[in-house]
Structure formats: C-alpha cells, structure tokens
Length: 216
Image (cartoon, rainbow, N blue to C red; front, side, top):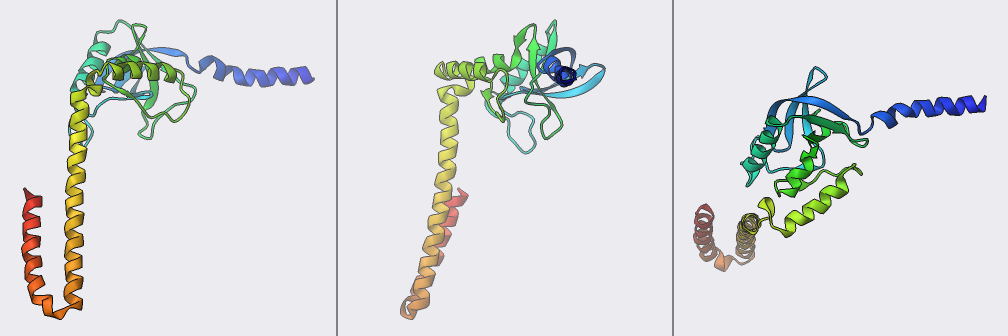
C-alpha cells in the first residue's frame, strides 16, 4: 500500500517535469519591438515577452525612442521574419508578466534570440526575479559585450546617458539653491525691519535672474 502511494505521488509530479522547459513550435505573426513579438501558438495568438532581457524602448507610451532601440527592433523582426523554424520555450520559474504577456525563451533556427540580442549589445540582462534556465549564459555574454563596448555599451552611448543625467542633476541643484536663498532672505527681512525694503528689492532682482537662467 505504501509503495502504491509513493507511485501515485510521483505521477503527480511527472507532468511538471515533462512540460517544464519544453519547446513549442510556433508561427510568427507580428513584431512589436526588440524584446516583444506576437506568435500563433497552437492556433491562438499570444504576445510574448522575451525572458530575462530588455532592449531600448521604441514604442513605449510617453517615452522617447532610445539609442539602439531601432536597431534592436530591426534585428528581432528580421530574425523572426526570415526564420525557418521558431520555437518558444517556457521556463519553470516564469509564466506571464503583469501585462498578461507570456514570458519565454525564443529559439530561432536553434539559436536563442534572447542571448543573440545580448551578445550584440542590443539588449541588457534584466528583470531577474528568479533563477531562470539561461541566466548564467546571458550574464557571461553581457560581460563580453560590455568589454567590447558593443552598441548600448559603446562609450558614445554611455557618455550621452551620463551627460543627460548630469545636466538634470545640475538643473535640480540650481533650483534648490535658489529656493534656499529666497527663504533665507525672507527670514532676514522678517527679523530685521531696517533691511526689509532693501532686501525685498534685491530678492526680486535675484529671483528674476534665476528664473531667466532656468528658462534658457
């Protein structure tokens, strides 16, 4: 009787062992961007998000097209359009994202598209919420792409991003300094009546100049 129970328990786990990580042959329907596409899966249209990677944005609402986003999209679309065989592989530790898209490994003619994008510097390893099947391979290839400064890892792209961040920080700092200056002057005027009129006029001039600088 005990042996029978053990066998029954093992049988319950067999489906998960067999189907976890299996590949399903699909047909390509539509490309969305570098890391998202639509496929016909067993007669049903599915939007698939490529697991464990992130390509620069091209179609995200209220977001400008990011450097190398177009190249990533073109590469993905070309690979899927010209593929002789496309397979989607599920990962035991991932199913769908918050938008209802299936999370998958995409195999194009026996080559892992997720990893190909990372190797070319058109995607970075991202959204690692668990230990996924090919995470270690992706991380190794990302290090190589970084060392070779490919595309998104190029010095030009990196310096551009750094410059934008530095400019934003500088602007924010100027605004904070201006606000602090105005507050200090107002406090001085409140507690020292003899300088009130003089300081009020100076504050007006200073504020006007600061506003003009920020608007340039």
